[in-house]
Length: 123
Image (cartoon, rainbow, N blue to C red):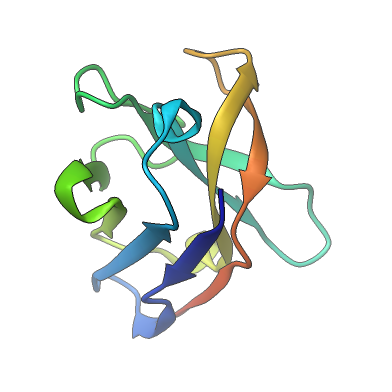
């Protein structure tokens, strides 16, 4: 499955952005999808994940209460609504599909990855 992330940009602290991820197909490989991010000089980290039904999404503690993951299965899209952005949210954000393990934990792993979209939050 191919993934295309978009929606990144430059925003001031406290602002909002909505990231979108388009999946090339709808298969069991897109049953569970997630968002990750990687800041300069840091390892990639888990942000949020969601199942096909959209029930029981889960989040990294650092974004809980500020970010919301959702999906539109009819459009093969997954979204990440990011509110109350902070400078420490600055990173390249990646969407992922085809979970391989660790579901329900921040160590969840995926097989397919999008190309990433840059989010920069200025103070």
